Image (cartoon, rainbow, N blue to C red; front, side, top):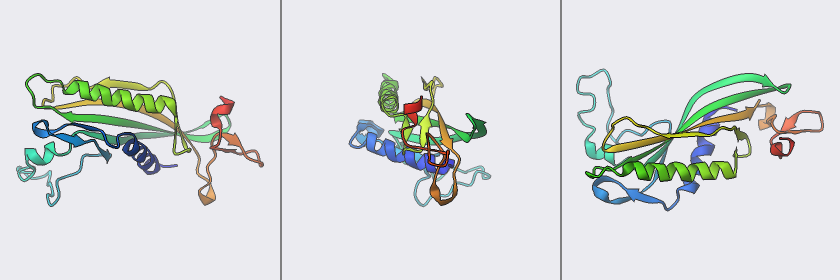
Length: 191
């Protein structure tokens, strides 16, 4: 299992979850929630040179604001281990929820909390992602308190357990196969 597979599977799940959801964006205009993998993309046609003093000169506030509202799926780290006699790995992920609210009443945090609640409810209902990754408890979420007006952020920390990849895209995880190995199917029956 690798982080890229989990990012892609989780992003696809969040695309389905937020399909049709709109939230206020720049100038209060309703926009669909966008799902990004790892980072917010750069504006098309703009290449940021971080070594230049004028690195973001061509990246305007309008380009930046168009990325919101959004959910960003981020891989944090990976820990390989052996648990219950099976080679496993833990993939630690973050899901960032971001909204843009330039109003003077600063209510963007409310939209972030609603997004976090929607994701938590979905994850707690089905703790498997793509039938290959099991989300471990506890599930942690928080509103990021940094003063980042007009952008508001919240995050969910996920610890996902995954089996060791075998030849032929077969995975050890969950249930015993005929030869004593475990597979994905019905893992939660044992736990």
